[in-house]
Length: 91
Image (tube, rainbow, N blue to C red; front, top):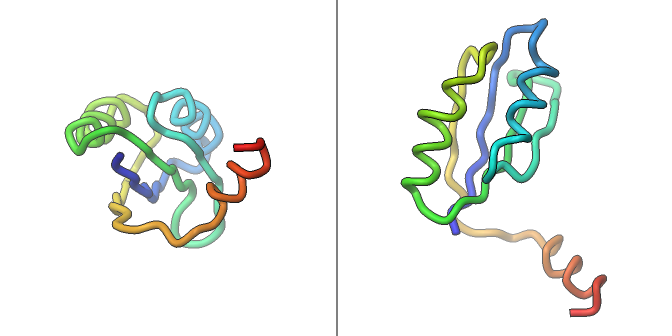
């Protein structure tokens, strides 16, 4: 599993439509609007690096309103969120 964080700058009047289109892409698990240097952050979880490349260079490229992206690969997770969620559903 490849996890990636994509920082996105969008045209000001297209932030919400861009976010809606991003969340519809298979492999993008979460999209956040944020304050600061970027407008949106997308959390991506896909099977392979090739899947990530396709998502960024083909699927995201087709979204009108994205001005710039910065893609970061996650190496290791230090969050207890997933573990706590498993126990919450009785696993």
